[in-house]
Length: 101
Image (cartoon, rainbow, N blue to C red; front, side, top):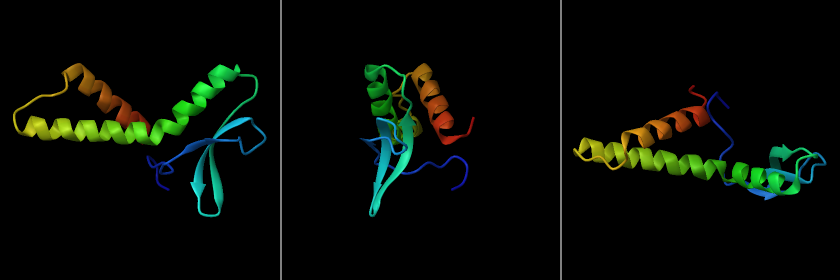
């Protein structure tokens, strides 16, 4: 896997694979691949929120890319659907998630 690529989704919340209570896993044909384990000692509510956010990461990134691409199409047609400040943040987050920054 080259820099900037991630394990493709979907990811799901599962039992931590290294003895942790919470984890994020990628289901595969013969089992699961661990994506992230949430360490013990974090408040349960915070751990659950962290694992939900991590599990949603591939879909969040995919959605931002779709919005950016739709904005690019509109800009080519002389339209602007996303305010410049929001578009700048979308570009920064996509770059960060893709390992470009």
